[in-house]
Length: 161
Image 1 (cartoon, rainbow, N blue to C red):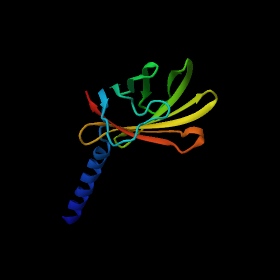
Image 2: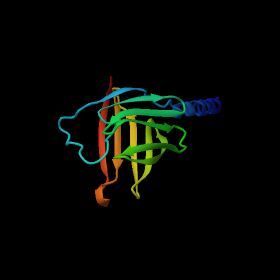
Image 3: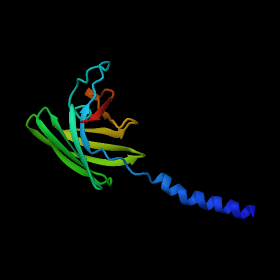
Image 4: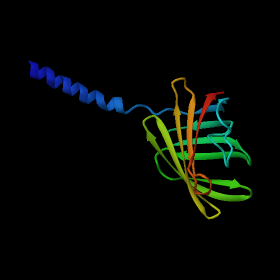
């Protein structure tokens, strides 16, 4: 009898374990506005940090699309959620360059790794998107440091609306 109960317990654990690890991935679709932290130092530096002041994200089973305003107008990037290469062409000071990005899920966090070549210089950036307990979008970005210096990391929070 005890053996049968033990076997049933093991079977129950085996059947429930996959469902616990197969959690639904978060949906980041919304219009997001940056939450300004009055104690944070100014972002400064080059390029956009996080998603800028505001961004609109759409998401389906295959792609995540981010539309934001940048110094040169609207910027739209599309990322494949299956980990395959996503190619986005950017413009900066009249020059165009391609960015190749790959995504991967780390639990409920989406990691986007992007490589670019601008004026003969290769660089890689990462952006991690997640939702906090209050439903805010958290974007952690890391970009190369100037002149080969230490990478720059930013942590930004966005609220819906």
